[in-house]
Image (tube, rainbow, N blue to C red; front, side, top):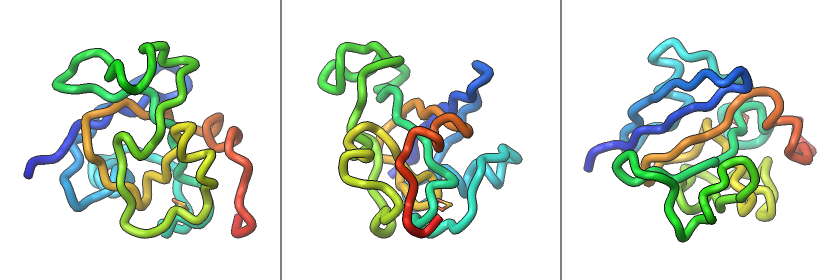
Length: 131
Ligand code: FES
């Protein structure tokens, strides 16, 4: 099985694309390619690496209609539509995961997608008793 392309959207409008294999995480690939994503625990317990799923791209197409009406700025997309986890993402509530938040240090990518990253995304999650 081949990997998937993940487009990282930064607050300044910059985007970077990484090709993530089936057994690796976005954080691992980004680090290997010199992209400086924030992280701390690398175990899913702190939210330092959190991103927010903005769109699911099928072969570069527009967002999946089943995942919302395509308004990337407002439509939450359940992170489970694009990611599995190596271990339980204890830093995120179920509600945060359904709203698209994903821990990039432990998430395994299931489809091409776009993910917003940066400090603003982290400020949107409620925090963890571990951080
Ligand atoms: S680095 Fe701590 S949850 Fe990902």
